[in-house]
Length: 333
Image (cartoon, rainbow, N blue to C red; front, side, top):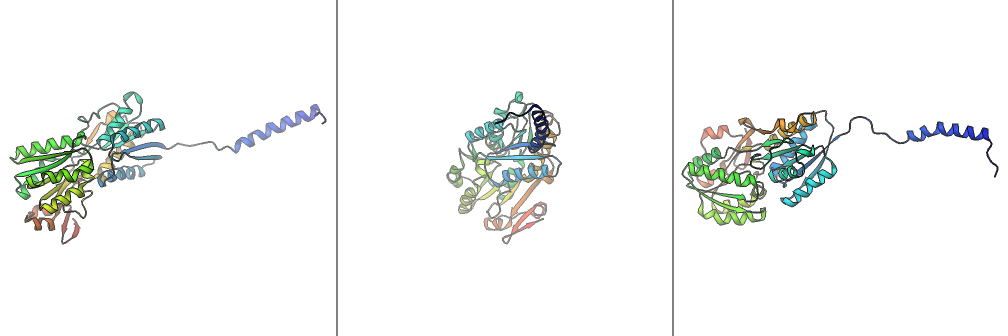
């Protein structure tokens, strides 16, 4: 093989210098703003938490922020919630969102103040009691007006004893149970409770107290709400009134009355907090947001169930209701 002459080597070198930028041009460079990574850890699937998740995403969709989501469901398992938090840490999410208290607590344990990653909670009853107060934490409380709810149930049914099923492993479940107990004591009504550790125990727990109470009060306890159909079945067979603080998943059930948040609105407020943080506001400067606007609550009455149980819903309460069930038809007012 002949050796290349010096002039030819120089020419070849010049050709390569021209060609290299052309080859490099084939490699696409990322330009423009990159989307923020948002990790969403949801304790369990049920209508209220699903609505909160959707509300948050719908709000962010109205902004000019570019976001991607990693949706994770702990299926009611605390250890799974912890694993999800570790996953988000490895993936270096920009914001970690915990929907329901145990999910948010797991995130807070992994993303401490020094981590630099903000944690946003949604549908948490008491952020202070749950240990969700820190410089990198903000969120929306769904603390219900338990005393008003208990009084409404008593006024309608005249109940002398009220039963409650709650999750002993959830901080919000225990807190709401204690609040319901205090309200019953205030109004001179016997309070009968039954604790569960998971949703599979809900039906049996309800059966264990149903013959000892005049009515049932179910708070926004995620473990119990996820099995509300089981509570409803027991109450219906026993001919007892059922109050549910979460109206999100009671369509088709025999719940007599519901007074609580519209969880989609909880989600929208959560989305607003995420937006503020992505635009530069520190989570600790936002803290816990409490919703006190009466229009954010929903009052439901099932007039068919009231008739079967022999109760009369006063007209002023019917007029104030967002939803009435009459003759099997859902009437939105």
